[in-house]
Image (cartoon, rainbow, N blue to C red; front, side):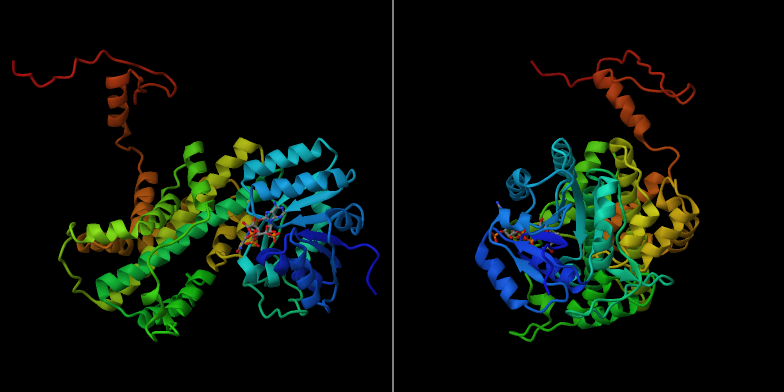
Length: 500
Ligand code: NBP
């Protein structure tokens, strides 16, 4: 028997909206759905008549709003940006004090801050919740990163905890096996209150930036095995499968193994070999890198991952350049087994640096926006449901449990020891990549980050001298307290004589 009013509503029935709505209904919540194009709503409701909670299709925003139990809770899952604003503008006149609007799209966190403020001024509550895990995550358990008013989160919490991915309480491993109508029972939900206003969407953006890094690092491991050892995709697939049983155990390593073993159904060749080498992007990696530059936080590995996609996109230019620009002819002649082990270590060390950068960004942003982020919990809710889910995240949670105000992940004893042990291999791989002409931008930038971060003295003394020379930008002295600035009168730079 359908309830007179639904527990929650959802607007936007594209891939994410349909799957999240079914997930919510699978957990026994009655959900009202609305989509701008009504045919999609009708089709969706007709195709899913028997969900445990029940779907209620609505044809207008008015009907949608009136169908919800108060205080009303409604999730928006439409295209981020203007479409989200259009939906909010349509909803606001129909809502009452205390109603809760939840944006589950990939919103820019500053938009979320703006929207939360505007709605709060009207007595409405707004939650910006990152939803990670793509289509599959939305259907059977995403990682959910909600930010906004805490009291509003408490109202949403039972639904969000029910639909989120679950991990085993002891091992932290994702609980799998959900099927339509039969969600996973028990386990620790991959959601927690992140912080005020835009905190949830900010953390989701960092998640995506880290995801860019992880994906590119895996591609570099593949490029090195291919370029230095000449391995075939299926052999590499077996190596990635093996890596997935150790410290690199993660969703992205697992799917990489599957992709490398896949044959193209048309040509029967290895699938990866027939895919054009140009990667697309939707912008969250760029947002992360822009924000790093804006805040002055070094996140070079994440930025290199974005640039790697940019350089991949100029395919025709690269093909033309490949006919003109020559690299070294050196070939690797050492042990295959030793190099595979070294690439594994280089990947793990680079990954640690990339995550260190992501967490540094969140650490700085929380000061900028006055959030109180719990880094251990953030790592914990990324253990299931999302694209970067990995056994390694448990190590990050443990690091922040040891020291909640950890300045940098690299300083944690586990990560410090790991990098110390593996760095010889890491350096060997990068030297070989340079000598043999295989591009490894994220591996190399991660090592440069590590070497810079561990340097008590960088060559910036010379750089600041240059700034003082040409722009009187002043400098601080090693023999004086910080914050005291000096300038000297530099000689005129010597210029070449112009012949008369
Ligand atoms: P899309 O981002 O492709 O958006 C399509 C939906 O937006 C449709 O329901 C469409 O309605 C609606 N829409 C648009 Br476009 N303009 C509208 C407007 N002015 N007013 C009302 N509705 C409008 O859908 P998606 O890929 O399911 O993603 C939804 C959100 O989730 C996005 O913010 C996305 O960034 C985020 N996200 C996506 C993924 C993923 O893997 N796809 C993962 C994580 C987060 P229509 O049917 O009438 O055109």
